[in-house]
Length: 361
Image (cartoon, rainbow, N blue to C red; front, side):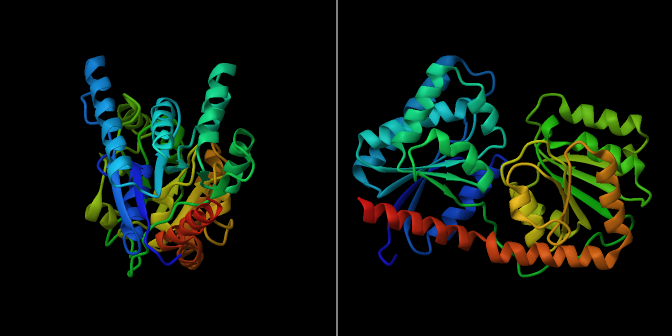
């Protein structure tokens, strides 16, 4: 593709902390090297205790802004980033409005629980969801497993696999400068992320280490529950829960980690895992979502079953004991990201989809 396109990206930008916001920020920075890109930031701005009318007014303002951009700027593509539950239905209105105003729509699905969302739909809501997919010119998913889940809901040929991508830093991680090795986990504080299992593994490990759990409390009370679990197991002095981290502080945390671990029960394709791999940090993750497609077990990372604390303990202990194996896994993960999961690669894949849609039109 040679001619620059007008692309309207619709989704959240940092802050808040979250994989979708990180994806959009990195993708738009890369796309702006070749195209004209605008972002309609739909991050929530109203307080948690807002009145219903305040939420309605905020959504109407976003819709009016979308309509104005479609009519005045006339983007070739409205690229809508969505996930499960209420977010999907909110974005369904965006899809309908953009199509009504004559724009091509790309629906980009994120979210680890999208399969649960689809399975929960009544017959009437399932029909509405199929209509939303049918109105979209292309539906982007993060891996082959997600394509198998989404394809039956979409017209034939509409689903495209485009994994998440991350920037690749020039330098690689050096690990903790002194003291005990650091195991880093960057994930929201919620049950499905498996931090309870990680704290349990820390308590059973033969190799002394520290656990750094960065995240936003997306599930009320979960941070306190994690702290209480660490207290009960006698490892509270080696477990830190400092909350969310962004920007340079986030990069510094990755660079100072000896290992990265994300023992989730549900995932799409976690950005934090890819960021750790890109920085040359060996990762220990679970076999959920698109993770098994993103790395070869024992080559690019270590994969364990979700909920298997014994396997998790063994994997972490093994990498801390064997520095050569840890270095090999770290180098393999970085090479895999450079090859398949850089943000530049994602932009090229999307360009191919845009190009095909332009030609088909």
